[in-house]
Length: 87
Image (tube, rainbow, N blue to C red; front, side, top):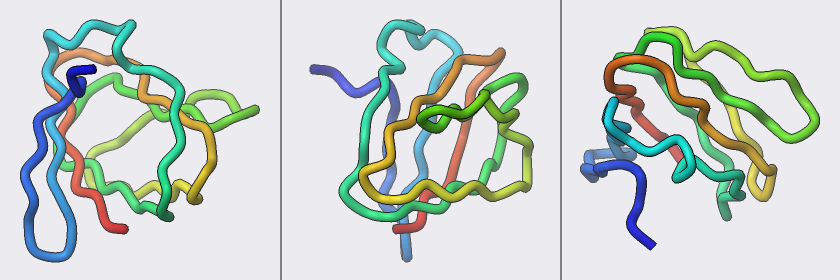
C-alpha cells in the first residue's frame, strides 16, 4: 500500500505532508504503536477524528495528542496539510 503522505525525518520527530491531491479513500482509520503529538504547521479545513468522537478541526499552530493503539483518521480539507509528529 502506498502511504497517503510524504514524510521527512527530522530531529526529534518527523514532518508529514498530506497533499491536496490525496484520495480521501486513502485516509483510513488506523492505530499507531506509540503515543503521538501532532503540531499543525499548515492546513485549512482538515480534521482529526478519534475513535467514538466527533471530528476536530486541525488548526495551524495547535497540538493534538493521540494515544498509542487508539483508532483515528484524518479527514481531508483544502490545500496541503503539513504536520510535525513527536513520538
